[in-house]
Length: 94
Image (cartoon, rainbow, N blue to C red; front, side, top):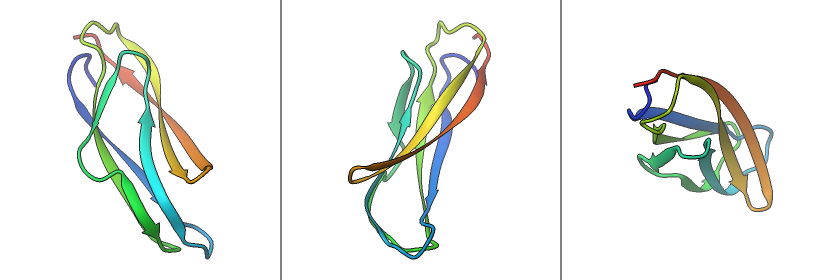
């Protein structure tokens, strides 16, 4: 990705086991100064076992960002429970 230019990030959660998930919220945790805007739905009422849900975000690193590697954290919150997974991305200076 390039500093200052938006790119898409998708967050996916699959309901494992045999229990339904209720009130699921998908989100991103980003480095300071980054911006993310949901490109659709991020809250899901009920997710049946074996089903997957996804949310897409338009993410923009700061325009003045130097070349770097950064970690983006996807989170899924279900009531008081939370699951998180991170991915390292590379940013090129603009």
